[in-house]
Amino acid sequence: MSETVLQELDEDGVLLITLNRPEKKNAFNKEQWTAFREAIDAAKDNPKVACVVITGGGADFSSGVDLNDMANADGETEHPFMSSARALLDFDKPLICAAKGVAVGGGATLLLNADVVYVGDSLRMRFPFVQLGLVPEWGSSYTLQQVIGARRAAELMYTAEWINADRALEVGIATAKVSDDGLLDQALCKAREIAQWPISSLVATKRLMRQVHLQNVHSANDREQDEMMRLAGSPENIESVMAFLEKRQPDFKQFRK
Image 1 (cartoon, rainbow, N blue to C red):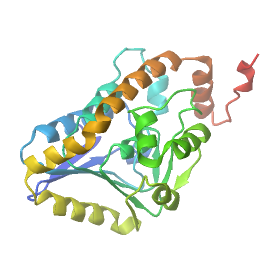
Image 2 (image 1 turned 30 degrees about the vertical axis):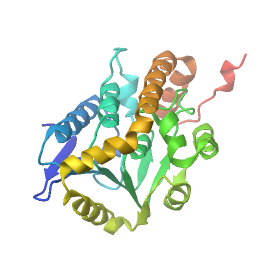
Image 3 (image 1 turned 120 degrees about the vertical axis):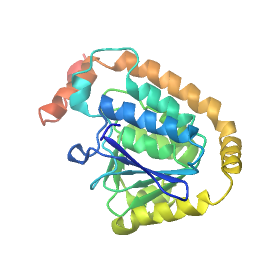
């Protein structure tokens, strides 16, 4: 079992999944993508798991894709984040996220696929895809609109602006704002409240609630992956990654000739 994703199942049927690369703000590398997918798949199939809580180890939820890892990508057609996305979209048990600190990129889109989202006071999230010369991922081109509406979603996607805890609550990304110290306790308490009920009923209810959206979100995810493959490695994407690694502002105007 990878140490990049920790799992703890309690006697009530609540599985706590902790993203565990705190020294990298829990940025996903290939090992962590794979471990995350395996944890989600195992939770789906485990009859003892009634509800899942996902949180980040240390001060942050997740800063998304590890850009150092991306810079060293070998161009393979099936990156582990793709299978992770499918596993998350098909997960049919109640899912709660407890997020504080940084939640960026994949860390932000993960929240959109949760059923309940609690955020700490320190939350700072954003959808940085256009800044990276890329497109949204994990079905977020659909799910963000589903959660907060088309115009607000467009504003957040097009600007890649930072969103604090109050803003996340205002637009509807967050279910509630909690102090950082009480965040995980709140999430686990709610998860145990949910986990007392029959798993068969919880699964059936989630499937019914998601049925109207599931085809659309899978379609969005498929289109996103096509566009991601097209734009990954483009001059604009390379400029963005190199600017990050070199700690400078990217210059996209050079490509407008």
